[in-house]
Image (cartoon, rainbow, N blue to C red; front, side):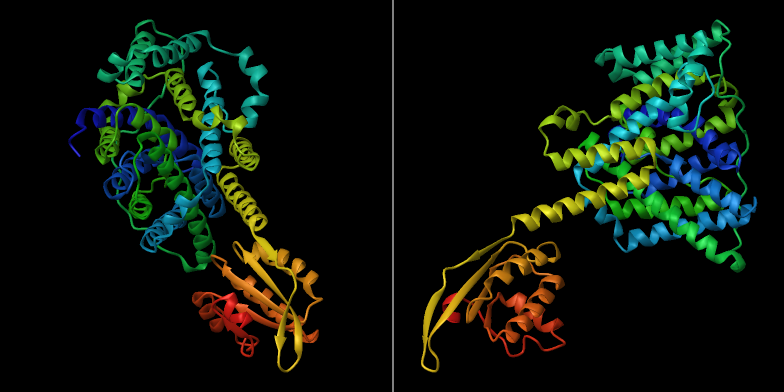
Length: 513
């Protein structure tokens, strides 16, 4: 963990400076107060890094989590004890998610969903920083920021614009040799803050910062409010899980590493559980702060721990100095962060990408920017899954052999057809097979060959059941050619004993014989 000490130090320091105004802002937005956001950033940032499974991740209050906390505060009429019970329970749920290894399923999220989410986050950051970039009060909504642009440009502050513009310029043009010594974000922050103070610019700054450490209190669970508390806690836990693990994937894509999803959830759960004891705002892995950390050199857990300790030092000793940092300077830094988050890898090949992948990416992107982050991911995963099912079902094929005559001592020559099923036989293809099989009812015997079926689900088994019943009604004899694992599966679920009298063979040759 000490092998990258310099990078981790600068990464944690820069992430802490970026996290400070966000933590204060989220605290205010939640209704719990600025100090609650700061305490949440310190406690969660420290323990999630210490126990988590994503080396370079920075955790703290995030927008989606803050919205749920604000809802809880409104629902419980400023009953902080009930709100902290929600936070405590959500942390426990996250620990359970990790123990039950639910985190592993996030790795199956298709890349177009990740790409749309990443680029959407980048655009959100850029749009929401337009107002502070121009020296105007920030808006909490992307749409509101866009609609208010005419008024924003009318009321812009030229001093703020100078600070933000040159901050962004430093971020963009700092030579790589200099960047290796001092992160561009920290360089820009220091230079432009000094300029602002020296020339007495009349610009908005971070402002007063609380200078006291939290007191530990144990939330008391009220059973009269248990239903609402549990529902909000589950919502908060799921939101934090998705938010965190998507950020972990973003960190992986930048650092070319691989995180441990379940360990990360346990770390996040421990952090959010402890946040409840100090009256703080819960959070998750923060994409923006994580990217800032990585871009500034952070690579190990030490960077997240340093980020938390720097926030503690700011609270205790450096509050007067940090309070002088202009919001316009932070806006310039965040503009560059937003640009860096855009998924250029996918954007460069977008016009050559498969149409379905492009549709999923665009939908997730638009929902991320204009609707809701979690809804975007949910819709994206659902749509991608449906398109994959459709594609697999279309690739599954039925090969119908020519009708043959087979001699039987009892009945003489009989017409026999062989139906070869190639490809996945599951709910997506079962209805297609059923339609095609209806065209084969003009025969006396039918052999259904499933030896080229890689897997078979319950829908396929039920389709075979219905087919057998239909063929019996038409006096058509049927036999099956199946792999042993498919036979075992069928026998397990054959409670109606429909397959009991059906001949099952291992090869088509045996079936003919």
